[in-house]
Amino acid sequence: MLRILLVRHGECQMNLELTDKIGGRSNSSPLTPLGEHQAKTLGLHLRKAITAQNGNPNELKYFSSSALRALETARLAMLELGIEEPQRHLVTSDLLLEQCMGDWEGGNRIDCYNEENMKKIKADTHNFAAPGGESQLQVEQRMMKFLKDTVLPVASPGRPVFVFGHGMAFKTVIRHILNSDARMSRKIAVGNTAISELGFVPEHASSQSLQQGWHILRLNDTSHLQLPYYT
Image 1 (tube, one colour):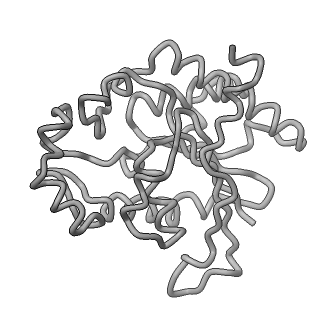
Image 2 (cartoon, one colour):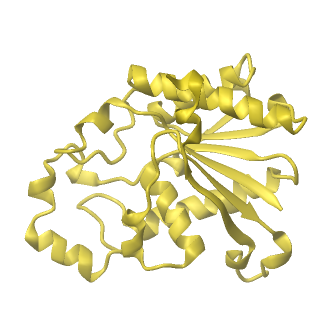
Image 3 (cartoon, helix red, strand yellow):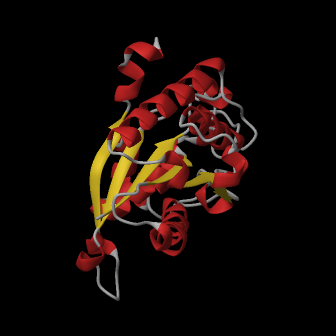
């Protein structure tokens, strides 16, 4: 089985404003001091887990969204993993960016999610897109394409691949694997620096579809934030 760990970024400035505003990509939003601490704690946790299995963090593969908050999370975690020059080991891609909310980004939630728009969302959740933005389906397609074309070819048994990215983007991947109703995507919790682990069994996939090859091994694991060195 091939293992892929989807790691959400640490707390960022935009996260503190999401009660009233729509975040979307917000690619330049930096980590907060808490977010930096979360990323370092994540790295310490991963280092212990990897070395306990006689693994070498420097021999693993790392990918990240090109958004600042994801890059900062990856860099800080990788430093704690003992990787001296994270930028040399980290592959970045715009295909891993958060869902683009177009004209709604930074907008007031109450105004954007008004009664009329909510009717449209409920009528076709999978294909609905904010003006100038992406639908869940579009995000799902680019995320699954990246996993298929870029991640799986470099994955090997016993060596997990790390993908640093975003909550909603990861939720679309999970929905795809479960083949659930698109309305379920927002019912999935993915916290800051949460680890959601995927397994892929090539023998279970077909030449027409990889769907049967995917398995969910862990979801929204933030246990590292409860450990003594987090506080």
